[in-house]
Image (cartoon, rainbow, N blue to C red; front, side):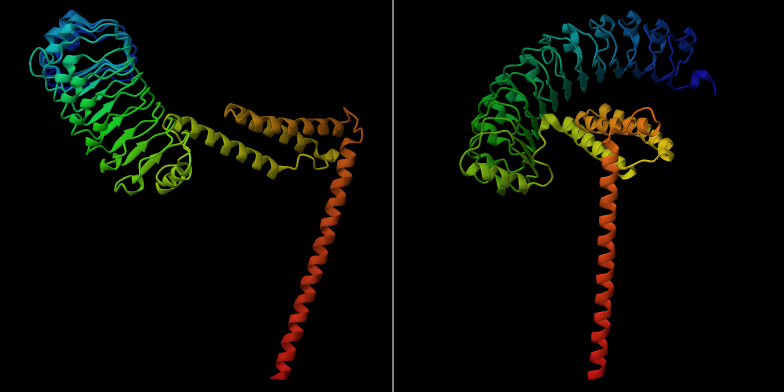
Length: 452
């Protein structure tokens, strides 16, 4: 195949530090993937690929881009996630035909005002940077078609008002910022289907949220909400509502009007009561309300409600899913280790001199399992196993003549022997009773036969 006919080139995970100038000869190249190579600079030769439509440069060490990149006028997808860019590369300002731009997890501290010219962009991803302000230009330089924007985990104190005029938005993510409120203009986003504003400092939701008629998923957990606007019940299509870890003292009494709800997360608030009729919501599958100071009948009622929705263990909070899972795995692992140890050996079983090698092997196995329990952070079990290992080591020292018994193991040996003898007598007695019972049954059968 002729090199100038190649349309796709994938150099992923190859420790490629540079690209030879000859790549400019791949005149038909449409897709170029160079992720995860540790590349520090992008060679200018790449800028000669005039037909390039997709350029994947994620997970490298790029802190700048060549100015010639502006010549890639057919480029529609540019992935620069997980690099070291500190400023928005000027060469990108000319690429207004871009449809998907990913700059996630860089070190951007400011964004070019010219981002407003990206009218053809369907998705702009800027999460995990250091932006404290975002240009109020999107939506002011024409009619954008933007449907997805991600500005999570930055330092934003407010959402640009102009962004609220981008009525094509379907998914907006502002998690992990410094937001204290949402602008009232957000009510214009009629096509918004998913909104993430969790892990902020929001005290109020805008009363205009009733305009989000298409909204299906609203994530507002870990904020400072004290109440909800009455118009929240107008979100008739909402399916997921996470309100965990706020300061809510009450919920709208007409909440049952939100008939499409499938999940409600209410953990760790200040709720004393719950709206009536929650248990009758037709599509509700997940309900959590742990960590609330319910009083009166609502204490029992909250427990009954959680039992009605078996899809979720009510003990698991939204912000503890992973940690609880790890804790459960640790408990199961420690229990498994202990059961295995107890099955292999009773640590106080009497040992004879011929058992030295076996005891030594048991000690090594126990130590390995104790280390595993420690690695799993189950320190209580690990300490329990350590005590038993210490006893084994003392016993081994006695068997090898390196230490005196001092009666410690002699008393245990005698007790164990007495216990074994007692158990043997009980087993013999049980066997005799069973044999006697069978004989009586046979005698009864004979009498019945004689009567017949």
